[in-house]
Length: 370
Ligand SMILES: Cc1cc2nc3c(=O)[nH]c(=O)nc-3n(C[C@H](O)[C@H](O)[C@H](O)COP(=O)(O)OP(=O)(O)OC[C@H]3O[C@@H](n4cnc5c(N)ncnc54)[C@H](O)[C@@H]3O)c2cc1C
Image 1 (cartoon, rainbow, N blue to C red):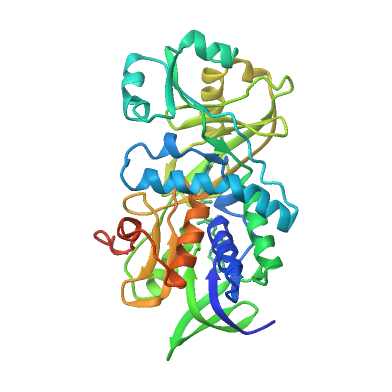
Image 2 (cartoon, helix red, strand yellow):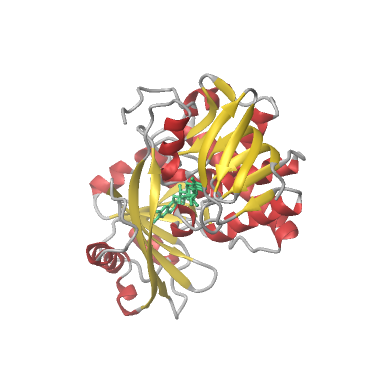
């Protein structure tokens, strides 16, 4: 194995893989080190909604435009990545119906309904789009241009495309320690020692180890999420339906993903009976016909959460050669393209929107003590 790189990315989830892609595109000599298979952790657990509207309504000034920008990059990426890697991203239009079961639910959708691309549909209009939806809804916010993708496909396509353009991808290679000697990083991995001029920490919920090693007192908290996949033999559902953080997402292969539980500070990666019970109950509530569907699989993953639920994207406060791209919480699939591009632009010293630098800098708030 080559032992010297311009940039070493620690973690080969969707974030690390997207960074490798945008760097390789600029002919930067980049290597990704991934302890497991590429995309094996939070990335493969994700449902794949690119829900800029449904997830980012709380911050319309910075987070929402960043998410919308990232979402918009997908329409070009689906062809670009397919051309380079031959991997289908499972890109699916159709939109999201955010259901309201009461006037209170409807009121909570008010900020979202103020967006020009979101419309309110009364219950009977919703049923024209989705005939099997719950009979108890009063209506839904219809976000026509939110889309969904197959997360593991996107991650593998980023990594393979980066490799095609010259990146080195090392799966099953754990990074044990990072030390700086003069202006070079010595990176100890389970496959031996490598050197790099810059490092990017993209290790999801496991990034805390590297914060400590690089002199920062920050912490990542896991928020465990469980999902079920069922087969929709009649291909009934055309749109993602969403209520109270739970959703049913139709995929191109006729499967529906029912997600997802939220269990803060739970590091266990096994699926629990309680989790499955909650999801089944919620699925039957949103789409009563789902009761007859066959279960294909169940899984779980750990969402990487920062203190304010916004990602850390940017430089180490005291060392420009260390960068962070982690803590994408519920939205790593949505935010991967914009994150990868932003890290590449920071490394290339190109312009990056000042408000994005400020919003995502790691030292923006009070650090949590470890
Ligand atoms: C149930 C569920 C549903 C979700 N649904 C959505 C959704 O619909 N839309 C959306 O946008 N987001 C969704 N998310 C969130 C999304 O999955 C995450 O935000 C995203 O995957 C984070 O990507 P990542 O690359 O930072 O982390 P990960 O995918 O966890 O990747 C980090 C990688 O770093 C590796 N690593 C850690 N330590 C080391 C080390 N020492 N050396 C080498 N490698 C190391 C790990 O093995 C891992 O592969 C969901 C998450 C869950 C759990």
